[in-house]
Length: 77
Image 1 (cartoon, rainbow, N blue to C red):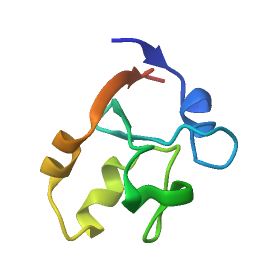
Image 2: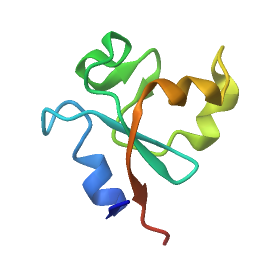
Image 3: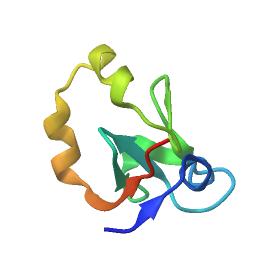
Image 4: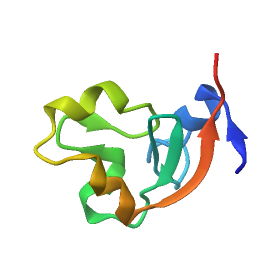
């Protein structure tokens, strides 16, 4: 799987580029086609970032990521 930096992930926020990506536990997911991520926002969460710590606030489990294609890994700092 291709490795991306946090800067590359940040550009896929639905504003700077047409792609909408999010990261969870080091895996980057393509969520562009999801109606729930329209314009790069899903409730109070923004695309283009690592959402690992934010999942505890969500009404769903990590299984939600199974619906999306894993397209890469976030480069470790």
